[in-house]
Image (cartoon, rainbow, N blue to C red; front, top):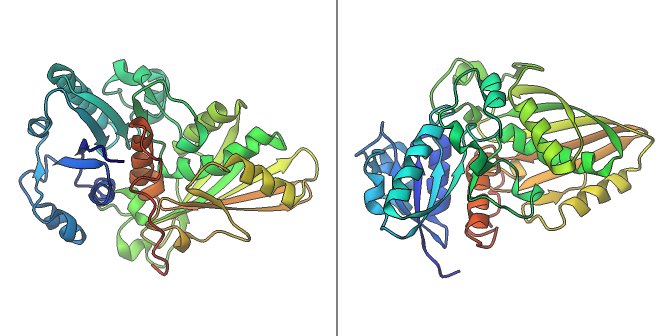
Length: 353
């Protein structure tokens, strides 16, 4: 636990970037060298994130051409990217090339969608644009730490926030073989999931006191959950996904429904999930129904289950900015550097948020 690893955050001025800075400020091993933001270059971090003042009061954002100056030749580097979808890949490609020329041993965790699919054609068909660095796709893996034991790569594309909660709910069910390989997922997310740039759907008067679905059965996280579930369970899984915008800032609540091959007892299904996540420090199987306020601002996922004959319901809650993005990224980076998976992430949720 004594090692100190130079750390850089690309796209550090957005919501996920801000959460990465908060988590890294208290991490025992990752030493923040640069918070990279072209739009914020030269500005104090506390101008955009006043709540980080006690930890990063003297820190300023730097532009994309300056951050490597703060990394020593021949050193290691933990590189996080919180840059937007479609822009992150090219930034990472440039960073990897620069690190290669300087002899820096770099490991990357990308929180954007750019490395969530192994195939260029699949990614481009889902996102409707050309990939920024297709030559790097085979150097990344997209998975949750809870679903993969061994890595043979140094770079990770972190699943999206909806996909994180949905996959945590789906994979043990598919692995168990108790249900059909078809799930119906309804999920509600807070407004921070839409990013920092204001949009009609995240504007407070439109969202406050409101609840509505968007992109029903057509959201790009559905094929992502299908790919994650198949990779982790070995079953070809069909996901029907309906996302909703909720009137709160942080958190995701997922409700999964599936049909069992035969009537299943609730205790048996609960044991399936307890066994699946027995070694997962951030997943807890709860009695009754999980609540968003019990996990917000933590890296925890709470899962609850219910059964009625052959009807199965699995509920999961996470913080979209932590477990669904920045916290999951730090969890992965801990693994990439062979640190304890909980390093810098063992804080409890504040409650009553």
